[in-house]
Length: 321
Ligand SMILES: Cc1cc2nc3c(=O)[nH]c(=O)nc-3n(C[C@H](O)[C@H](O)[C@H](O)COP(=O)(O)OP(=O)(O)OC[C@H]3O[C@@H](n4cnc5c(N)ncnc54)[C@H](O)[C@@H]3O)c2cc1C
Image 1 (cartoon, rainbow, N blue to C red):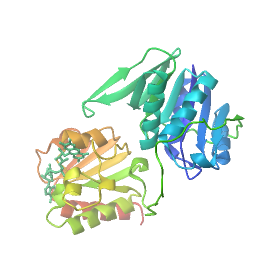
Image 2: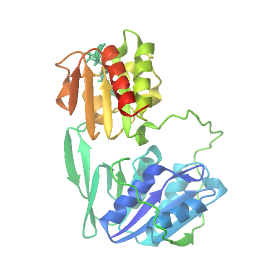
Image 3: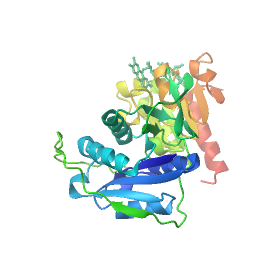
Image 4: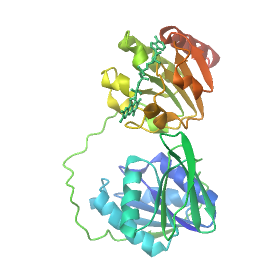
């Protein structure tokens, strides 16, 4: 089995979940190569070598400074053919899933998207992925070569720097024109932990409706003490309590933290689709019949305006903060 892993970059810097995809590829065994596309990505390519890729294909060009599906898919398609890889693997980020779909389509390859686990059976990938909003996990494999897969962020341990060095293969950018013209990129420098990378998420739902400003302040304080991020249900977002970027679920972000604390969220399937694979789920709800209790590892029946500050106090004292 030879696996080619897409190392996504942002402004030249590797996106953390790419190292998880690399880590999973190394676990699969066989040859592991990497593909880095961007501008000023020599350090990211060297990093991939240090973390275990034996060969790194690099497309480093001013035209690749911003993710552009037309251009990146053409580059990736050419490199998949050049490497002879059995499998092309990307992290299931917004860009990773776009790229995997396009590469799979262009190469007539089957795509196993959003895997929580990947195994190799000879040169065949078997991906375990959620269906029906996360209610069922299925093992999926596809015929042919190459096979394409994406791995959900936080589903695997990242490959660590181990001092290795890879053969670097510089590849000319594919001679294709993009149908997209990016005029400007504005970055939101919030200093917040990105939801998809957070190991702890504290989320609020319509249950904060009585006083949403106070509710999300309390939720934010608990998240801050635990070094986590703030999430929300769609009901909370639609009501204008908190911006969309915090939404977790089918039409929001798919997350897999170590701990997910849901405050005043009932547990609709569309919400579970985004957080159901969290390692530990804590449900705080004043309605003991709330469906989220049935998937929670820990449940607290109570008013979030009382329970959340009590948890924050307890966490502060336990963590000496
Ligand atoms: C196509 C589609 C896509 C969707 N995508 C998403 C998505 O991405 N994400 C998402 O979340 N939803 C999504 N939804 C909406 C989803 O169906 C639910 O409507 C939504 O998740 C409900 O949000 P909620 O749990 O916050 O609100 P509710 O269902 O109203 O639940 C509020 C909960 O708060 C509890 N509560 C009230 N007051 C307190 C208090 N003081 N203390 C403690 N508990 C309290 C109540 O008991 C209740 O359980 C989607 C729906 C559709 C049709």
